[in-house]
Image 1 (cartoon, rainbow, N blue to C red):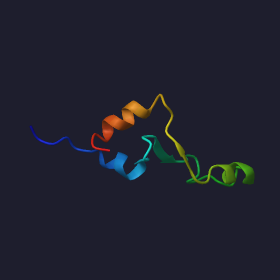
Image 2 (cartoon, rainbow, N blue to C red):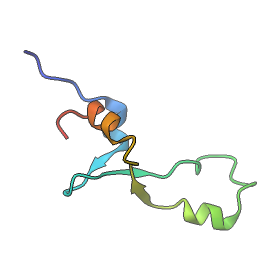
Image 3 (cartoon, rainbow, N blue to C red):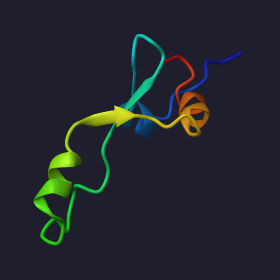
Image 4 (cartoon, rainbow, N blue to C red):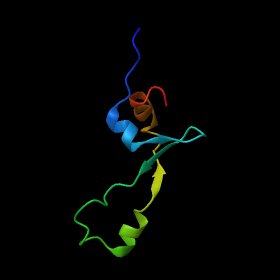
Length: 65
């Protein structure tokens, strides 16, 4: 059988941690930033964990991660 391919978009967006959780970056910080408050933009910095309801679909896109 041929190898399964990893989705290119998924490997750019997600990183699997040593414990098995999946790390992602925050959304809503690319454009139209003038109407967003400074507090809102500050709290969108950094990374967070993929929600448990979406973990299975992310793992399906990354079969060898």
